[in-house]
Image: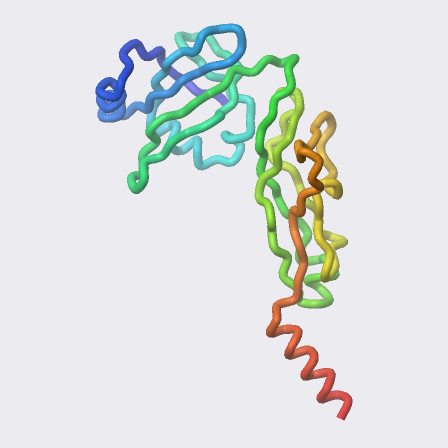
Amino acid sequence: MKVVAFKRELQGSGASRRLRNSGQTPGIIYGGTEAPVAIALDHNALYHALKKEAFHSSILDLEIDGKAQKVLLRDFQMHAFKQLVLHADFQRVDANKKIHVKVALHFVNADVSPAVKLHGATISHVANELDIECLPADLPEFVTVDLTNVDVGHSVHVADLVLPKGVTAVTHGNNLTIATASVPAGHVAAEAAATEEAKK
């Protein structure tokens, strides 16, 4: 994905306010061997890009003065109640150095799992993103969580995930829970009542 930015000469809150008033968003690029660079981005283009999941977990081609560099979106600040992006931070990436990022989890096949199909259970997503480490070229847009074999009372943990080649989960020694399957309380009571009724 490509992002076009401009070098920002003036800094400070007054300059940033004027920039926002003219339809631009201040930002910064840091990391690597070069010094941090203050930049300005087109607000509307950035606002719409931020709505795309891939923008948050892809290596971006950021172009300044016709020169492109590989970056990751590291942070952004939104206005408390206006649809306004106040600031964006990008980090340069080195193709030969591993990066540590969060990527979204996509849950699939819940409807065919024994938990849902046989027991009417609800599968709760405990986590919606995962900390991973990989080389920039191996960065996945998202990680798929296959729920095909999940039954009632079972959970899916990080260790159960099939990660793309070259990608490792950063868990700090914890085998974190990703999803759990449980039958709603009312459903259990109704089922028990039906069983009792059948015995009579």
